[in-house]
Figure 1: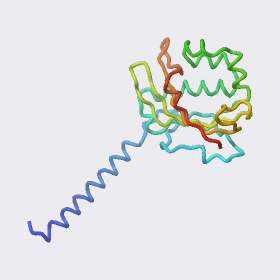
Figure 2 (figure 1 turned 60 degrees about the vertical axis):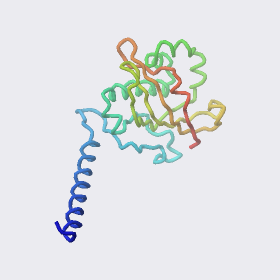
Figure 3 (figure 1 turned 90 degrees about the vertical axis):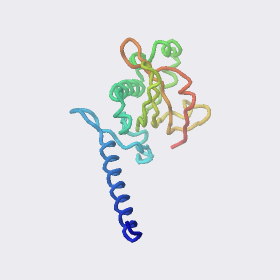
Figure 4 (figure 1 turned 30 degrees about the vertical axis):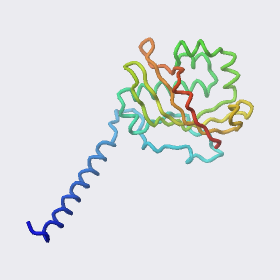
Length: 192
């Protein structure tokens, strides 16, 4: 093959490869959605699109496309929805049904009610779900909380906080539950 023909052939092959790559990426990112399920969102979900006056935003748990494609994606969304609904309703008994027995034993009702008495959580977005073991998951997520400044973390006394957290979920009595673990110690937060 002559040098004059080599460049156009290489460019044509490169263009075809790029086109196939884009097509494959689009097919991979397109979520399979069952009737009645909530749509998955791109992984760049953020609370920055919610005006300050509307914080903390919707209490609906949203999944990224990546998280929705995890085999436990819908189960994770369901338990986190119940978890955050209980916090927003200030309902300890309902919250206790969404967490492990170990976490309940470490969180007395009076302490929990005091800590969450003014809390409202929203703009809840699951970015990624990782399987740690067959019965344990690591969930990377963001959410926004509003609360009285006096009830905010000592490290950030603010009435509105954007959280970036990792929640451990553990299979317990046949259901996923939010657990305690070292994963949660890496929480990051910034004021709204």
